[in-house]
Length: 263
Image (cartoon, rainbow, N blue to C red; front, side, top):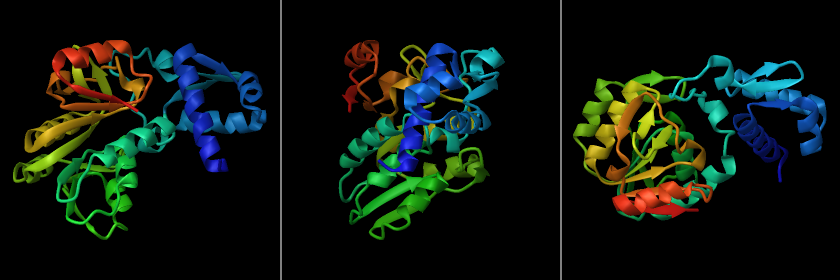
């Protein structure tokens, strides 16, 4: 395993631990991961800068504890999100990419999980990928057989994606085979939600123009409710997630006729 990948995995695990326990200590983490306390401090500094947690004496505490978070989860910048649940996102991205066939047109919503789909997508002839995500465009630029359509608008630098009435209007002229929809929060009753109103509006339009809506998310997003609703769980055709997805989601998917894939 490379140093970069090792660091990414460790930071992802630290993030999960602080969410689960509310706080972590430098000395305990150094012992658990068999690295120096200086290395752990660098990890905590990185995660603190990106809003995942807040530093405390000798360790860190969950940022939602500090902020007394409401039902809407705290949004992390894209750089931090790339570090979280990295292995799960890779598996989800690889599986989702395997569902894409030559001759299809697809929409890749903005997000770090859909970015993994772009990463694992083979250079297929006669495939069109529509996206509002600048990182996805960059990932696909080297794949010369894929036709890439960037729907523009106003750049939101927090996640390097475009949103505006212009973006929604551009989608209105399209009809695509599949939408791969990223998720900030997903709840059986409240549906798929996001932090950003413009993103919710755009995502609803994406679902409108797609023949099939495929939601992609790691299991950390289940039970999380953000402010702006996109669609209900029953409006999803397929849900791709990891093996840690709760049994309640599987039960709900069976009841609603959603094709659940745990990879």
